[in-house]
Every structure is written in structure tokens, then in C-alpha cells.
Image (tube, rainbow, N blue to C red; front, side, top):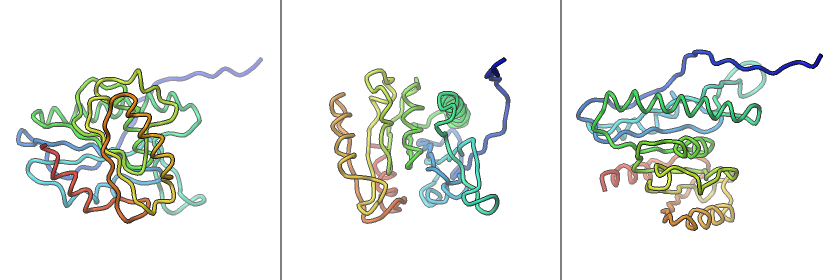
Length: 218
């Protein structure tokens, strides 16, 4: 008899790191999603200089961890793989919805902004494509909308957000021709994305992060 594939839903512990306090005084909440092989506790360090009395950052960590090399040493996290991908997408969408709800309960006056770096960019897109609450900013940093994502059926949350692409001009993982194809794709939907570049590789740039924060209230 052939083996059966079954699934069950189980509770588990998820981890997130926060810079800045969440309170009634918080006006801007950024959910920032790390890239493949990164950990949230290191990713959040890029945003610590930006946190203040009105601006807070939360970095959820992907639910799956692995050794980056061999069977010991440094550990990284990932949002999903190709194995049982639809279940993994459902799991992280549910997870990120809970993060958003928790944070906005603590900071009910905050406007939501989302930044996804590399793999986190695709994660942000899939999450917001199913979201109901409005998001002011969607920043795709060194990443683009997933190629298999049906843009026409995306939620207003995704299509009404201020869309910004950011990438380093020396990033080996970002091809200029792919960026142009992506821009044409979103412009067909009536979106007018902003593109920001910096002289760097596959990394975050503090000067650009400062610029994104300065315009958050616009």
C-alpha cells in the first residue's frame, strides 16, 4: 500500500526582535523581513539607529533554521523552500498576520510600513497580497515580486501601498534587466514605483534607510 501524506497544524514558538517601543505614542511601525540565511537578531541592528519615540521596528524571523555550512557553526533562517511551498507560505502569512495584530494592539495609532530584503521581499509581497489592513510603504530591497504571483488578484493593501525598489549597483543577485521587466509589470497595474540605488552590493545601506524614514510621514 502506498504511503499517505497527511498534515496537522501544531503550535510552535516564533521569534522576533524589536527596536523602539510600541505604545500609544508610536506613529510609525515598520515590519522588516530578513533575507535568506539571516537571523532577525542581527538584521534588526540595521534599524536600531532609526528607532525613536514615534518610530519602531519589528523583525520577525523565518520559521525554519539551518546550519549555513555543514552540520555545525553559524545558523541562518529561511522563510520557505520549494518543499511543500504552499503550506510554508500559508504558515508565514498566518505568522506575520499575528505579528501585525500584536504590534498594532500595542501601538493602535501607528501607520504600518513594510520592508523586505532579498527573500524577505517576496515574502512581504505574498503576505500583503492577502492582507486587509492598509500599508503605507512597501519597500522591496534587493528583491522583486515573485514571478509566480498573480498581480491582478492582489489585495488593495498591496496595490495601494507606496512602492519603492532599492538595490545596490554592485549587487550580483540583482540583474538590471530583471528590474526593468519587474517595473514594466507593476506599471501595467497603474503603480508608479520609485527606484533608489546606492553604490553597494547585496546589503542594506544606512543612508538610504535614513531617507526612507525621513519621508515616512509624507
